[in-house]
Length: 181
Image 1 (cartoon, rainbow, N blue to C red):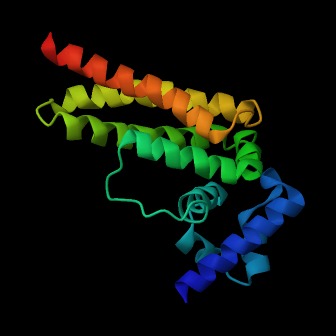
Image 2 (tube, rainbow, N blue to C red):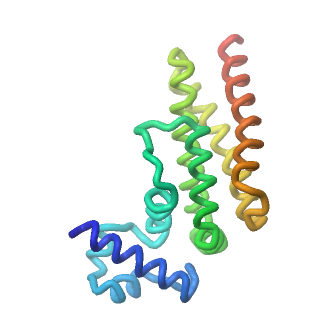
Image 3 (tube, one colour):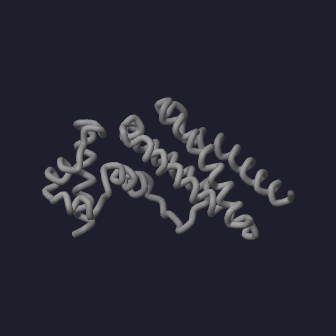
């Protein structure tokens, strides 16, 4: 039953966004149109942005997601998820939720980068791995933000290839040089 309610909330949300735009959709309206209480809505979702995150992570790309994902796989998945939902993503990016949405994307890259660094160099100190993950989690999302701002102006595969090559080389080289020093 819970998944049925969640699906109803998501379907209602997407319909309201298509009709009214993301910024004009509110929890009260979603709950009312879904024939549930606000409490029921909040049982399933924190807010409308958490619905967007759920859509990106669960509906866009039906690929199995391992417990830990290397940064390149996560970035690839994110690019495809964003592109598949570009109308919604653009509306969220241009809304009052922009900063929180950007933080969400950045945290996904941070976690994947941290997992990646630890996997290919298990001897690295946690604080050093966290420093490098933090560094790259600011650089890589910027390419995504520019892509969104420019109306998804290049194909996802080109963005993945170009940024992936740069980050693969830079991340491994910087960490390796750091550890040798």
